[in-house]
Amino acid sequence: MIKYVKHEFIDKNKWDKSINSSVNAYIYADSSLLDILTDNSWDALIKDDYEILMPLPYSKKFDFKYIHQPLFIQQLGIFWKNTASNSVLEEFIDAIPNEFKFISLNLNKFLLGKISNKLISRKNDNFELEISGNYKIIYESYSSNLKRNLKKAEANNLNEIQYVKPEELIKMFRENKGKEIKKLKSKDYNRLQKLIYMLIHKGKAEVKGVIDEHNNIVATALFVSGNGRSIFLFSGNTKEGKKLGAMPYLIDNQIKKLQNQNYILDFEGSNDVNLARFYKSFGAKKFHYESIEINRFKFPLKQIKRIYSYLKA
Image (tube, rainbow, N blue to C red; front, side, top):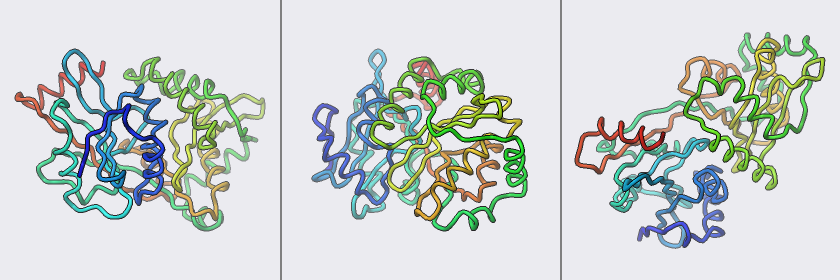
């Protein structure tokens, strides 16, 4: 039986234990991570004794309560321990209380074959590099352009630093790429900073940097580890870092660290053609996950999307 459980009644110990033993486990569904990135605004659907789980992150404005994908979480959906039927997604969606009038969620890639034709969905690209052998074998799959950039980085006397303050990572992003992303507000960066410190404390995150020959930090990256994955979750790069080949150098170092450990380096995207090309240059393979939208209002979806954009503002 599927039960709707409000946030305050979720047994977090059972939840995390079940997520970590799921066949499709992702750190995105960790209760502490969800708590921080939703400000504790998530409920859940739970089947039997925490056998199958679906987090329901939500927001509320005026009289509207809606489920949506939190920032900095790529994939959610349903997580199961043993097996799940092809109708599991439909069953769980039907169990979402009617008080949630609009639903917009990214599902995890393991739900691809379980999406009903009745649902409005959109495919997204993600790139993953399976790291099971030694570095030399992985390096052979690098593109010729990437190999040139790594040689350039070596010639530029770059060095990696093992710890960068989360504040420095976020500051670098905001002063560069972040200027182009207007939807990210100060409160979002504050949540991210809180998340990084929590994950570092739990031994599940590293913030690394690259310094040039003058000891200036020119690139930074956040790698989050869990469930056999190292997720390239967030990064900052300066103009100088781009010229010097700092980001390829930093990711290459992470691959060296993970070699022979049966890890997946998850690039966390992207639908962007240029980023996709960059991730593929490491030999990463493309996988898909889907986004779904469900309108429970009586008026058209196009109008709902305008309302949804307003609610998120």
